[in-house]
Structure formats: structure tokens, C-alpha cells
Amino acid sequence: MNQSDENTIDPLLLPFESVLLPDERDKLYSSTNKIEYSKRDIIIKQSARVSEIPLVLSGIVKISREMRRGKNVILRIGQPGTFLGLSSIFGSDVYEYSVFALENVSVRFVDIETFSWLIKKNGLFGMEVVKQISADSIFNINRLSGLLYKQLPGRVADIILYFSEDIFKNETFSIPLTRQELAELAGTTKESLIRTLSEFKHDKIIDMNRNSFKINSMHIIKTLSRLG
Image (tube, rainbow, N blue to C red; front, side, top):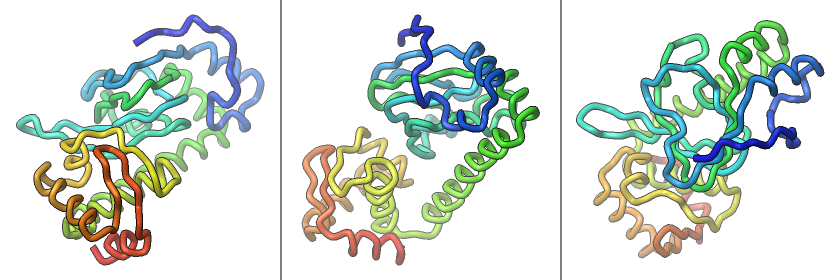
């Protein structure tokens, strides 16, 4: 983890920058600091007190909640332009999950007092924040529904679609998660996940070599996801 000494403002560091007035933008940037993380570094620790809102600038992160008995549930993957910990601005004093770097990641931390001030002052900025919170809530509802009511092939198909369409936007991609982490994302055991992926490969639905995936039949993957 390295804190950047860079004072220049890179373009597109804030996803809602277009709705900010010059003085608001200056105040927001003056209350932030940029930090670089290496793969597997922890960015947010669950239950730590909230003092800043992190914004992912580059790279992707794993958002994970620790349950009882050391069990973990991966909630989602965070991409560039994603604010983390938004649910804690008004709903909690602590972070509700941990965030880990899945590759080299750049994060800008925004002071929570300044962030809250800006939400109250600038309605358009506040609306953009609400939109992201709403999108996160809808994603979590769909994820929970899938975990509760879909059979394992449908849940594994959901994961493949998630990385293909939402994260990498390509039918060929490399997933930066271990098999255990993929199992946590699918809500199953590592052994069951490996068996299901092997069946997909045997049926030529996908090609798979360690963490590299290629979808051979998007139609079948989408059908499995839809039918569950």
C-alpha cells in the first residue's frame, strides 16, 4: 500500500464530476487522498469505523462480508468509478463489509464529512449517489434471489455471465479469484463448484484453463441462468 504524493488532478477521477460547481470540486479534491494497493491488500476492514468513502479509480476489488465461524460471502466485484461504503453514510457508523484488491488498485478516499456536505448542498450530486445505492440494492436483491432459489448450475452460470457481461464485457476473460472465492460468490462449496465447472467444460459450454474462461455457448449459459 502506497500513498500517492501526486497533487495533480487526473481526469475522470470522480464519476459525478460533471454536476459539481468549481468550488465544490475544489473542496472535494482538497479533502481526498489517493492510495495505491497491491493484489490481496485490504482496502476496507469490516466493522472499522467509517471516516472516509473510498472511490475505486483503477483495478477491481472483492467486496466480502465475514459471517460466523470464519465463513465469508463475496457480495460483488467493485470496478473503477465505484464508491464503496455508501450504505454506511447514513445507515451505520462502521463498514458493513471488507474490500480486498484483486490486482493493483488505485483508490481515492473522500472525507465523509465533506461527502455528506456535498450531498446536502448539491441535489444533482445527491441524486447520482442515490442512483448508485439503488443500483447496488437491486444487484443485491437479484443476487440473493439467485442464491436462494436457483440450483447450482444456474448460480454458476450467473457468475460466468457476471464476469463476462458486467466486469470484462467479453466472452473470453480471466477471473482473478481462487476456486474457494468463486464458491463463496456462488454460495456453495469449493468441491461442488469445481464439479459444476468441469461439467460445463465437458459439455463444451465453456473452455477453461485454470482462471482463464471462454464461453462457447452464450445461449446455453443464459438459459441456465434464466431457468435456474
